[in-house]
Image (cartoon, rainbow, N blue to C red; front, side, top):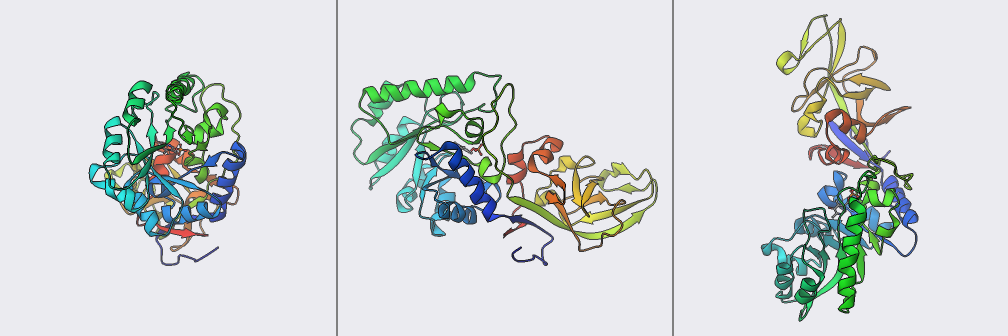
Length: 374
Ligand SMILES: *Cc1c(COP(=O)(O)O)cnc(C)c1O
């Protein structure tokens, strides 16, 4: 089980072997010859970027992806030696650090190519095409891109990438159109003799729902490595991944009390006990990442069964109804996300109740929640 965090009010336990297994599952789904770039941005979706990067590197990952230069530098300083792609843009004042820390930028405009070429050292980059996501990426034509690439002295185009907006949505032709647009840019470049080594388009959903024509040389899963695949819309093929969540989130009970029928609970008195009940106060609140929207509608697992959240979630505390679990004591652990016996609660279910997405729940787990690796 690893170190027992007796001193923690709230903590997460992350299974290294489950992360490695999820990585292996993606690898075997896409088959040999396709690299799996582990996306470890946003502190590996709350799982801890350094530790997860070590696990992925040990499992054979040649590439990792982060959002920012700062995230890339953190990994290099921790001794991570894989290639690292910086996906969410490089500020002008960060360009030198790309060279110093051997980071590979995704470039989103033709002007940025010229700026990279002006750096004192050679640098490889990936150019991102906006094929319809409408966020980052160039909308330049193939001819304009060819023009921007001609005469580069030190910067070198290593990869061409794009990102899908709706890969799990089989009611929409958007992904098919995005692939076609990306291919038209690729063939325009090829006609001019430009064939970058790496082509990549697919994150978790395009992998899980087997959009094989979008796999190319590298795939870029994040969510899947942490054990999640978004539900599909429309007539989707069966998901080809069998990934499982690697993270369990716990909190301790600070206090237990019996309250009489009619007693209000919490800020705003949004809950009144309909009967005499036993309340447990948990040592975690919205500052730890429990969505405030779970007030009066969420649940946790206490004593092996679901216990409803009653009243509003506070900054540091959350109140639950434990009338059904009379044996619970202050100091006992409850499960905010995870499994006890055959009762389980994952980030997708929590997100549905809170009106958000599973990514948001995982990334929202607060920095004061200790990460324990098992
Ligand atoms: C976050 C991100 C990914 C990973 O997406 P998942 O849905 O978590 O697999 C891949 N590519 C880009 C550009 C991203 O921003």
